Length: 225
Length: 410
Image: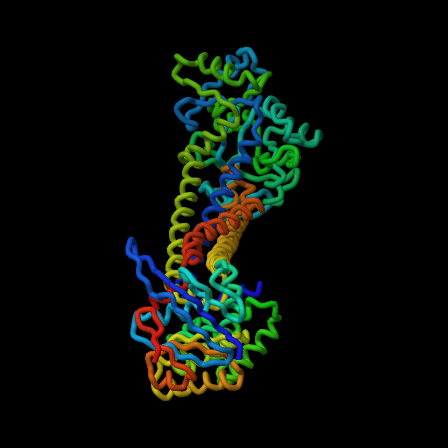
């Protein structure tokens, strides 16, 4: 299996006024293609920062982040935005759906950046909703959906552009046990049937157990366990 | 274009706020367009003035008349070509027309709904000063020969359906110009017109009749409201005016002589500094609306910080996100502007067609009051500019927002 994500000697330092805070310290991590990795660790250990670097929404202070063979640490903000639009799908803890858009419009949103026609965009969005089992709720607005359903719409939005990598920041953190189980099953399906590489941050050991590999961070350093 | 529905959806998110902002913007543009139209009409009226025509009036007020004896003395001033007596009659129709039984016959109450501008003039001297007013020779001849004759502007003729030979009655609301036996009777001797392409702003809604007829009617000396003068050289207007005023400096009726344009402007300025007032109101309203819209957009962006972060995470560039915010602000501007222009057009159309009001406006020289395309375009432009300015700062903050900073606060 080739490497889908390669984090090489990455250091991330945040500046708070004159104070510098090293969040990641020369961290290296390889995620093979089709892998399902869970990143665990206490609050402030740097797991979300690492996830943000892999998703291309933040850039390292030093080191390289290679995703799908491309070092995204050297891309400009505009290039990163373009890269994110087709290469990575992001799943948030609080779903972050746009409340004024229906489920299908939310899923269709990333496709506005493509050259697809309106009809093609709608078809793809409906297909993504079918994959997450919500085709019958396509016209519902987020306020009309349960937390689990909202998260499934958010997952549909993440996969609609068919990205190579899915990153999830505590995707079950705001859900009850039953909904969380449904979401985890869905992520397993995406990993096993659709061969998506998934990097998931979680505090929940049960969620982490569903991943193939668990990696633990502490004070910005990966722990060997 | 594919982003437009997305922008519209956001505007509908808080429809009360959106509606109030659009209405506020509409009121602003409505006021700007309406006030601008009034000013534009005033300007065109002033532009229609000739540089070689002066007006001499009482220095205290237009309501004080000047002695008739001033005419020959003014004529003697070097540079003066002609002098004509004029009096603003202030007459209106007492709803009585020859050949028609009228229940208000004998009633001298002024009918303001039929008010129009009418003046008693020394016709033989007055009309040659106004070459822009054209009267067919036979009608001019008839006017000169008919004591009760009058010439009316083509617009006025159209308004009342008058034609040459028609008779009507007018009664002034100014007591010294009334006669005991009732209203003055007039006969339409001629209908004058003007080439509005060559002389834009020329008033074709006034009625002129003989000064002597008024004087005889009231049965005593009535003085002169204003003297209309023609001078040989427009460049000498100031010196000629000064010379005329100097003639009467030590008399009981001192004068002010000014160009026709200045006279019209001062006539309008009796209500205060109109241009300053109207422009001031317009600017104050526009500035207030700028603040209101800016506040609306700032609130809209502030409450959507997370969504901005999500959009950027999904791959929308900072320019895209900025575009959405500016687009929303522009839409607010366009909607408010269109509504305001429509409102102004409706009001001005209503005023220029409403019985009673039309005549009052005509009496003030504002007979052509309408929303001109240029003013409507200016209104829309200001609305769009207000939207753009109001949306720029919130859009810039959305542009600069870092995804990690936004998502950290979720």
